[in-house]
Amino acid sequence: MTNLNRKFFGSGIDWLTILLWLALCIIGWFNIHAAVYDPEHPSLLSIDTNYGKQFIFIVSAVILAAVILIIDSRFYSSVAPIFYGITIILLIVVLIVGRNVGGNQAWIPLGSFRLQPSEFAKLASCLILAKYLNAHSNKNPNLQTLLVGSLLLLLPVGLIMLQPDTGSALAFFALIFVFYREGYVSGIFLLIGASAIALFILSLLFPQWTVILGVAVVCAILVYFTKRSRKAIITGVTLFGAATIFILGVDFAYNEILQSHQRNRIEVMLGKIDDPRGEGYNVNQSLIAIGSGQLLGKGYLQGTQTKYNFVPEQSTDFIFCTIGEEWGFLGSSIMVLTYLGLLLRLIHIAERQRSHFARIYGYGVVSILFFHFFINIGMTLGVVPVIGIPLPFISYGGSSLWSFTILLFILLKLDANRKGLFNIQSF
Image (cartoon, rainbow, N blue to C red; front, side):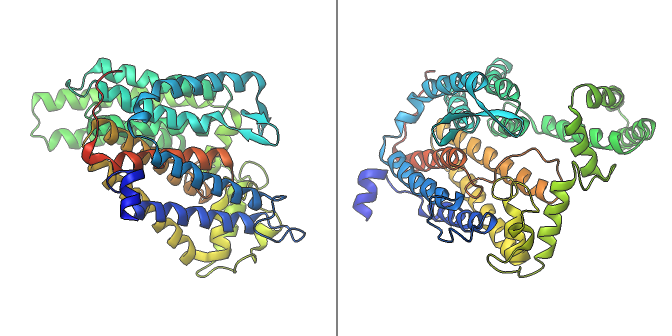
């Protein structure tokens, strides 16, 4: 095994990550079986059902993973611009010939299979961003590089928004953590972004004057504890002015930019409206399903919320409900810990890379997977708005499983060859 590993995969593949990936795929397969169980086709391998198709997707994902590990690691950097260009073309094609499902024209029909280009666009964006930033790694981080790198991401985001698929588009913004790790964005910028989100939510919950008064108090406290210097006072006044303008603009942005169903989902999440049969139906049924599982769950194939189709999209966006209902808090915790273990392992892998390309790409992988993990589970628990994104490796779907598998295994291939890695400086 050692000789085979070195011959085909490089200096050493990270088998722990592969085991975590395979465990999540199997967890997903069994819970898809539970979510859409058909008594007429009880077998997990029945290709007439989604769980039978998912098995085929998993087997093909294993084959894809093996192929990725065999290919020379330098191939992935060299092919990044080509792959990026292909995905941009596919994102344009889907707007012309795509199939509309659930209000999103996001799938290209290929016989009985549907290809979702936006899933592969995340992979292509991680590759092109890593290649571009790597080409400028011998320079100090500058605004021009940041702007060009951002434009490379905003192009697919704009095309995806035309579908419109807000959930997939938002996932690209998670790549800001790549810019942060490479020194293009400071921690203050991330703090400002988090503060803007908090102010947006507070402005929807409370009267504007109350929020502005609260900001004034916070700014005054900051000035007081920074020795009341002239610089501190100017900074405090500037922050207060910027926050006030932002707060006063929330109403316009909320009512004029967001669509009505998006506003309704946010208001349901914030508890401003109670709409258990409308926009709040999915989340309400999700919470009932998860809560009914209690500590140990109802047992495999015993979930009533799942069996009687009370939870919409229960094998895709709301797959976590099935886990919560049938496996309870304990089973859900094991799944979450497995996922967190994978994310922590990937951070460790990204940090030990010797090439800028591999490290940048590694943090892109972590950012995308964490965003999907946090948002998907958060929306099933009602703590974030429902935006409709899959739980990687667990939700039903060939496009998402393949794209996330390729995303992950390219990093494992780069990691396997880290001791003799390249450092391509051209773009």
